[in-house]
Length: 251
Image (cartoon, rainbow, N blue to C red):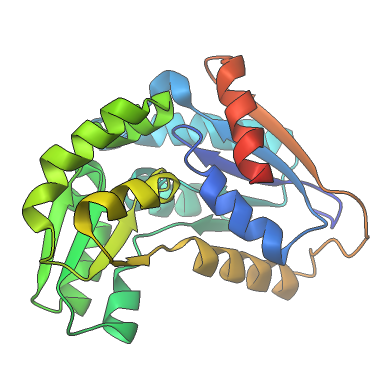
């Protein structure tokens, strides 16, 4: 591994762009390869073994590209497979996203909280350990089945209808919203339209900070002041997804 090699980032779709945007703020000189596995999206309804296999195939691609670190920007993949990957590929640093529930404990413990996440994340052992350790006893766990898919589609009408149906019962009743899927930060304004004024908690800024610390410790930060290079790969070869990905990067 050397400083000039790329950082690999993957998600079940383009939602992980919200993680990459935070990483770019703290590591502006790096090269990145982003893998959007939209062909197999969503991960949330797949078995652990299926998710292991999907993640491992992507990791093998990143190894072939000599990536110096791998970011798992998918909460479901992180919850289900990061331990498996770390044990199998011991020489590669894996930095994994997780729902920012501990932040509620640290900063807003007494406020009623809604955790929005995929069914796979909410049912995972990793999330449940986190949840029971920091439970404020005022928390609702909401599996948002299908929401990542319609965000991926970028269908505004479907998104608004989904949120109205599933979030309306919590309007005025929650103050904190944990965005437990990397797609969800893309629709914060739409969520506020239904829930009212809420405080969002998102793990991406903390992942970015941790990634920088890991690279610094291994002396792998690229200090050369070159324009950042981002390579986008989509498993279904969807050009529209690539276009939207780079539009979001520029926002």
